[in-house]
Length: 450
Ligand code: ADP
Ligand code: MG
Image 1 (spheres, rainbow, N blue to C red):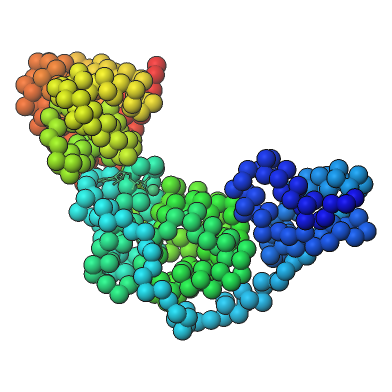
Image 2 (cartoon, protein in one colour):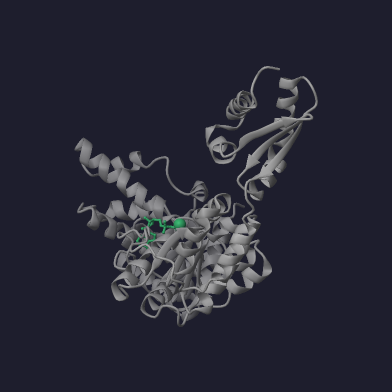
């Protein structure tokens, strides 16, 4: 065998590159160097123990097989650790929070100036979450620490984190605030372990903060070493009265993280963001249209708001699709055009066609009444409320229905009666959590196919 170990290693790296892709190779393989080949042992140097563990777990056999092919004999792969990082980590752990380590004068905080409280539309679905976020922005590190915000995709969690950041920047100009996704935190941490000289930078970045805004914490699930590091970070910040705000796509109990971490996530205040109701969706669309300085007719706003119910990002995206189409093609702004543009968007549960009959039947059932009662003339409270609920649900659940149509379906009532009913229910929904639960239950039943 005339090839040098360098040539042989290069061959292996090339092979791995086609199998694993350039990115993985750059991250994990490039920092390795061949050291020796003696007694059928091929030794490579690795920056630290973390690398050797990773390799052993993932590609050890593969590399040994490649080596065996090249040398035409059994080869053992061995690792030589350049330096062990553990002593370094330990000394850093001991350094006090506000050490004399020079700090960068500006931390790249990644806070998006567009995501402010002013631009956040408040409705029943996010009122409590917004109020808590505002309280944190006014009184960081005091009342709600940590603030834990959870909710489904596209409902405004990230927006709220940035809004807190933007507000804090104004109210506390000297604060060190960092917005970071959990993924970025984990990759920063891994980077710090891989290259030990980066560890102080990592600690400095995270431990000297006045406010940490960490997004999508669910990405900690399954990442044990990052969980451990986050646990330490959490304690350090919390012990020093620094504010922590966490956003998650699920509540703490559903996060499969270590028990001790989960219980800490419950220490402060937990708020959820629900799917927005129709009125909020309308208000959001109006606000976005206004921000774009584009006038959108009411019937079109209503159409979009009814079509997209469960994701504000999608709601925004649909409006943008419509307005850019109208702008660039100079097409008249009609409902028909909008229907064509948005024919393929909408929530999956939209495929179940909700009829006014189904709504009336379900509501009547819930209140032990008959559909006839709902359509009839009686105005006693036992009948009036269910009737108003049914009207409200018809207006919010059926895409193409006018208040006049609804009035007709309820024994020929006037459309102003329908509007009055809808407003009344809306108000009740804003103030009565039990009522919200009841309405949600009815909605679910309406959506179940017989
Ligand atoms: P999440 O982080 O919950 O997935 P985002 O915060 O990224 O959701 O929100 C998605 C989009 O919807 C963003 O552009 C955001 O500005 C917008 N948005 C969400 N909620 C609201 C709201 N209440 N008012 C105005 N815009 C909102
Ligand atoms: Mg988000």
